[in-house]
Image 1 (tube, rainbow, N blue to C red):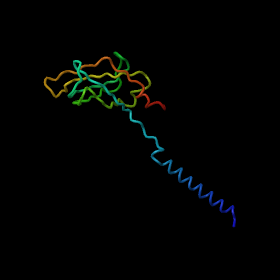
Image 2: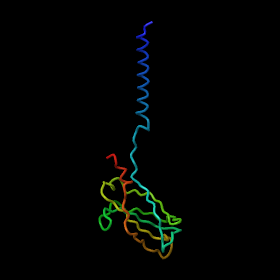
Image 3: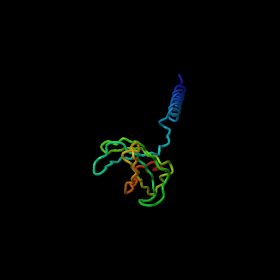
Image 4: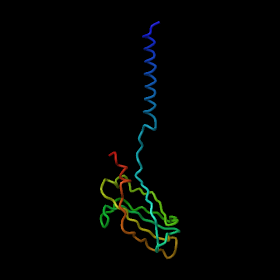
Length: 144
């Protein structure tokens, strides 16, 4: 009996097994990094005349490069007829992949409550001050 031949066959089978394992891991969805969505969650509490709003409201969200004045970044995002309970609102915002480049950004929020479904339609009110965007949305680009 040739021990070297058995050893060679064992090594060949082991190498084939490692090749299959490596190919499986390479083709596995776990090994492929998917692009990250650029949206982030904004949560806020809406009070009117000192009391939490319960009802509907329309919102406009815009992104700016300064706490006051400045230039708007991207488009205004609109949320109409949103249900507000206990004053709480949660919304996903997505200003696109070029909105965050490492420089300061501020969120301007405009609200109309009740929503436009009532007559007469009230105008949107700009909430002040603009809200600074902190590091969470910038984490999307941490590896760049």
